[in-house]
Length: 187
Image (tube, rainbow, N blue to C red):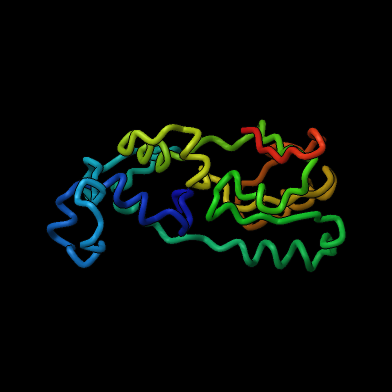
């Protein structure tokens, strides 16, 4: 998958693709939506881009590629006895990289200082929509969709399990103390 997952696809489609889609597929949007927000990008489904690793893909396939589920990876992580050392799991949809704020108690800050490279699909969405990068991180997963909050040894075991499924994983940051009433994510 291009990295987009399944959350944010409506926004990605409308921010990226041209108005030609509205004419060809009028059933693909609510007619009550202001027309300036409907397919406001400049790209066609059949335009080609080169993706990391020299793969040639159409914009349509890049944005609309199937989502790979993490369920088998999570199942193996739990089956191997790591549950007791996992303090939290966050699927980065519906709040993206700031979703953890819904679960973070006051007095803690999440520092994401080793993010994965931003996949091409998000660079294209940002280029077409002109959405500020800080907003992109609040709306889209930006290439990683699942976070585990745990100790370093367990993180390394989780990374090894993930890689056994050919899914890249890495430590992207850490949690640290903040002022008593503060909850914050730094990216």
